[in-house]
Amino acid sequence: MPTSSPPLDKKLITGLVLAGGRGIRMGKVDKGLQCLHGKAMALHVLQRLAQQTATVLISANQNIDIYQEFGFPVWQDHMEGFAGPLAGIQTGLLHCITPYLMCTSCDSPYLPTDLADRLSSALLDSKAELAVAVTLESRNGMLQKQSHPVFALMKTSVLGGLTTYLENGGRKMQAWHTSLQICEVLFEDNTAFRNINTLEELRELEN
Image (tube, rainbow, N blue to C red; front, side):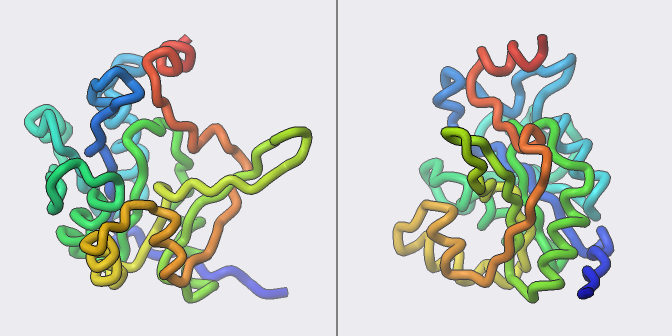
């Protein structure tokens, strides 16, 4: 039987927390700074991500001074106008000094503690440029695959193609993925990738 490649040494991976959105569905508040169990959601994510990577960057376009208090470098989008998560990834790649970048969302506080290991092992096995997390979701009594494109590990060499895609007006994550060699990694716990999009969802989770 084929054996899996050992995961990458975490010294080769930079983490990126995407916190650069407008938070429209949460009432135009900064999602990453909303409190969950006594601390900001982004801080929950940062603490989990920092254990799996050499260092962590934060992509943010507002409340920069507050994010800087978390103790990690904070970068605003290279592109203007809140161009979406791909603009945050582009900025992360521009400032990444390791050969791999792993990105996550600021509003998913329970991301897997083995995310980097599993994504990197699969990426090496498949000789892919990008590995993305997927889960199985029940819809109409059937299990269907659900991709979580923000939760991805990529080679920093994808920067050139991403920049071209953005400059040509592209904004959709999964459309960009079609231009790459990607592999999907199945995670059993779909709650680990849950996004907290509204204040009501945040209060329900806290209770």
